[in-house]
Length: 75
Image 1 (cartoon, helix red, strand yellow):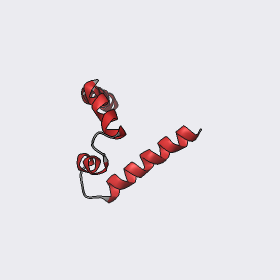
Image 2 (spheres, rainbow, N blue to C red):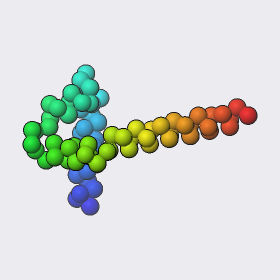
Image 3 (cartoon, rainbow, N blue to C red):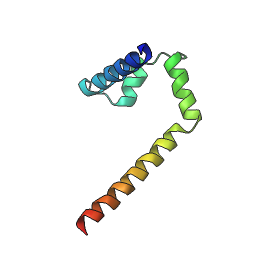
């Protein structure tokens, strides 16, 4: 339960920072990520595992399905 609360609060805080700051998400991350720290280690592991490509593929699949659903509505 504690981990769930911490994860939700962390995500909420990150979203608030992004919404309230003119910097891009990448620029903000660079400002708050300590070099060689825990977040840096996690991000490097995501990058090494192909996370960026996986997210891009998922977004493409969602966009394609959205287009299919939209075309079904016009038929």
